[in-house]
Length: 450
Image (cartoon, rainbow, N blue to C red; front, top):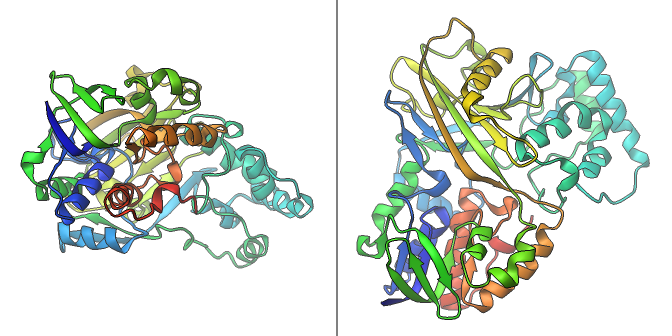
């Protein structure tokens, strides 16, 4: 049985970030194991039989970190396409610019006035919200809650907002400024610059996955073990067993597999079973539609759109061919829809494509005259780590116990914190945990909620 100083499980952005940092530091006694035959995890891209590229969701490349940006520049050089974000909400048979809260002047008069009235009533509310639903009402008012924030958030999370905490939000949700909104109503001004991703870039070729394939190719290939599925972790012996009967031992384990799965498949399952049950997540279904021709004029510059209403199953649609001219074959364009699922929100996979196509027609994104030449579907059982009410309590029990056993669970589902689960966050968690273990430098990203 071979022993490594560092074992990394999972070759998504976090695992690759950890391996890259070890390489930078000149450390060689490590190995990375991945259950799939490719790198990237949830940031993988696929090309279908008709030549269309697809991502596992609407990924875009923006960053909070110079280290991350420099690595992206190194990996792809000049092979990037740069965009100013154009995101919209489709509601009441019209497009409203994102963020909705700042652009209610676009709504029908009655709906607009109801949203504004709800905002104006907020001045008397002083109570601290106990959950995300209360936060919505107390921050955005009854009108915006009714028409957008409540239905949309159920669609995307697949859990009711009253079951979510408020600790995750940070820069994710725009808090309305009533004076600013009233000014926008008076002037008809579209207020669209809010948010951390108002500018982003995207790979010129091969979708998001090309980034992580490039990073994997930069690592020592003899230390990378693809097609290795973990079956059990013995934390007392510091051993990992894989489905191909390979067993390795480690001094430090950096795990990026889903935290609840890690617990269930290790000898800590009994001790951590109760808090593990407080970790909720949603499943995501991706449906890609490849079409002949070009997008209609109102879609030619749009990046992605949100859909709060019940006339479609998806919560978001990306005009994926707008991200790069190489995402679709010449003379074609593509759109990509995302549908969430949970025990509270079931999805009939047999009818999903039909329902998505009807939803695209209901929301006027495509018509019966558009020629569909390709459809693509993908299901990821772990789509979003849910910021449930008891999530932080559970994590405060689980993570210290694992670290006592030399297991560092990081990444989108390893850390189980949506607020630090973008690609840049995940890579930096991998980099920083190595800096902690090698140089005793404190981690920042994994524990940051701002």
